[in-house]
Image (tube, rainbow, N blue to C red):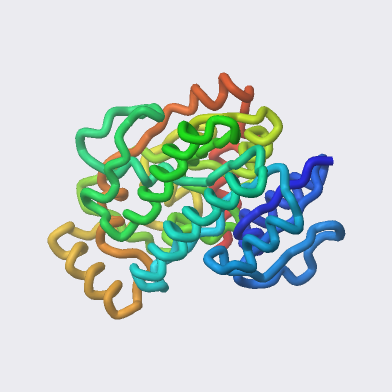
Amino acid sequence: MEKVLITGISGGQGRLLARRLLERYEVCGVDVVDWEGAPQGVDVQVVDLRKKKFEDVIRRELPNAIVHMGFVRHFQASGDTRHDVNVRGTKQLLDHCVNHGVQNLVLLSSSYVYGAFPENPYYMDEDAPLSASRSYPEIRDLVEVDTLASAFLWRYSHIRTCVLRPVNVLGYYVHSMIARYMRQSRVPTVMGFDPMMQFIHEEDVSEAIALSLEHGLQGVFNVVGPGEVPLHTAIEASGGSALSIPEPIMRPLFARLFKLGMLPYPPGAIDYLKFPITLSGLRFVEATNFRPRFSLEEIFQSIER
């Protein structure tokens, strides 16, 4: 059996993926926290990607493939820490792939890297520019990571490198920024705006990663769910109620609360509540015949408040 190493394996998405891959792969993983009660056969090492010990794990395990999702995606850490973990950690991982014979790499990016702007076309494909840093500097590290991996796949074409950009991920186990936002009972929205939004279930994301490995995909792929709905509809379907706030009040309020540590996302996230980021997932479907198993109704019902 081929061996897959998962970075960030102890997180919700990492655990789901590990269980999915056990059907046909040997699975090991690294994270900065342990996974107590990991399934039999899954070896988890507590390792920082930036340390030499991580390279030692790769040298010892000799994985055929690496799935990289060991990022700091929350804003509780400082900007310098986020950048160091995400960008420098990824750069070192890419170097290890070259030096230790890794044959396949899947990196889990995000639809957020495109940025939220009024001029965004509907159903952007993978050739659209990564412009998030223009209005949301706090996630420039994720844009840089995506760019690093996209350049890597052309420079080292003998390593099958796949960058996946899923739309908003919801589910029971994944604690993404959009999941924390949607779990509120009163969900703040920007008065006068109701953008179309796309969602995908966490288990469908694991399935997409597994398909990427099985098909040995090389390239950049959007991964979309079963459809799109207006933001207010998504809030109501998940059991919340929208709290419309005028933007001149909302933006300074969010900035103040974020600075005080009372809000988990910075004011740059407000644009994602105003302007649509709808992606075309046709390229991924054509490459893998991917079909999401979870409907929008099931996705919204999976949110635990």
